[in-house]
Image: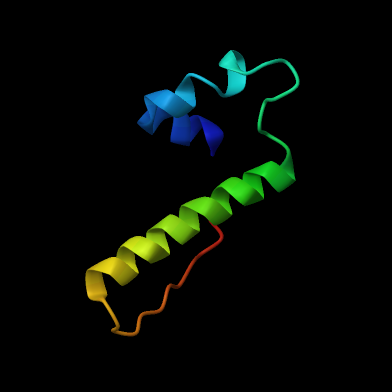
Length: 63
């Protein structure tokens, strides 16, 4: 997931994985979950901003 995010964002790419300090690879499960949570919040916020007060539901498949 970090590799995918880095492929879309040069700022992220500059500080993760091979470019990260040796003690900060961002691959620990809890860090991955936090990154995913932040991304999902951004998606939900973008949907909410686009549809205002209309109701919506997200169905997510684990694959």
